[in-house]
Amino acid sequence: MMAMAACVPPNPEDVAQMDFHPTYGAVNTRLLDGELVSVRVQMQGARNIDDVIAFNDCAAAQYTLIRGAGFVRRVRNDVDKKGPNWLGDGVYTLSDAHPGGVHTIDAEVVAAGCAANSIPMV
Image 1 (cartoon, rainbow, N blue to C red):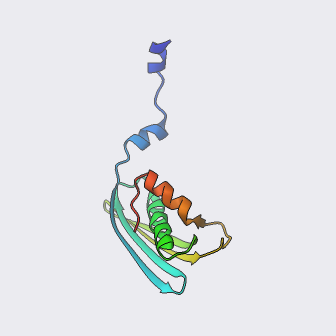
Image 2: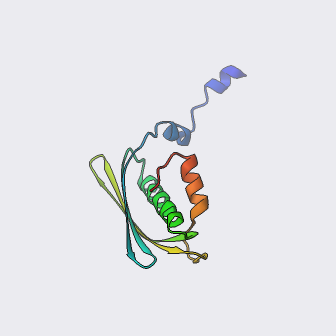
């Protein structure tokens, strides 16, 4: 029975996770107006745009906590790739109360998940 288990091909998602060794670069945050913040990140080794957006969300969540708010809502998030460099450029709104919307982030929950997954924050 053990010999047969060794013949089962690995799950592609598990292989992708094992091969994921990103290098996280600069994080730049800038308060644009009141509760509107710009978050820009750079990284290498992203598997796709979702990894870059996750890094951007992590930085936004930590920034939100630093500013004393509890929630952040993603307004837009652009991702670009130049050679091995991935660039994330997001705009978020900060809020003390849950702002509603599809892309609302509970800053404490997301920041904890980022820390657990070794994604750096501001």
